[in-house]
Length: 315
Ligand code: SF4
Ligand code: SF4
Image (cartoon, rainbow, N blue to C red; front, top):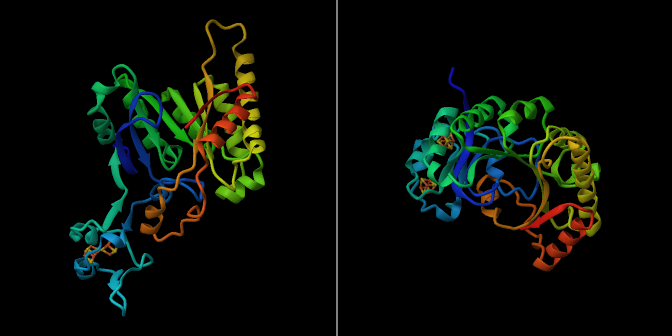
């Protein structure tokens, strides 16, 4: 039986989602609600219509075709979109030549996703590969597993980007077909974690430990977000946890040949480029007033993390 899933984008020639040149498959659906998320269109589990009013030329074609009366003009002639009525049939998107209405997300088979990944095979020969991101790839576990398994069979390096806020069984299904795990950690204080992303951190920290115990290479990624986790103390606490996991890996590897697989930590500076996307989805962009951290501040936080004895990269 063909396994299908929902993706919001396939990005070719990506250099930010793992080593080398990669094809990144962004899957739909996430268990967290990080208010600064750069991919808000991937948060909901199904395709939806994005509306960019600044592109609209007011032709009214969408109003004429919408069977639900979701598209219209108000008494001042302003375009309005009633998302409550929208069934995501896509008819308005088809007639909007200004591309003010676009579909975020589509259903694809794992086979078709892999066929698209294979288009860039020549670029993966020396380094690079495929990365499943999101959203949360472990939420569509059968779909993700099949993509990873097929890519592996083609000799392509596989990586997943996960928040790990999912049952362990889902991650355990993916890991045998995954060469590299990239996992976010946002805060070591569970209450602050909940405030920032809408869920406590116990599950994902427990999963971090279990991923490390599998011996897989892992990169812990910290999005450095002003007002959330950008103090030296907050970064030091995360780095201390990662150090503890490094020690666990070294202890597990004791007596075995070769070096243990690496554990590294990346600090990723907040940026404010997703505002338009939030507006197009009808959401408030709560990160609009945040100021991105300076290079100097990021360098200082990298020093703080390094002082805990972990390998740190700052971006
Ligand atoms: S079809 Fe597109 S350009 Fe025309 S009114 Fe609708 S949103 Fe605007
Ligand atoms: S996707 Fe379909 S239901 Fe939704 S606004 Fe467009 S035409 Fe109407």
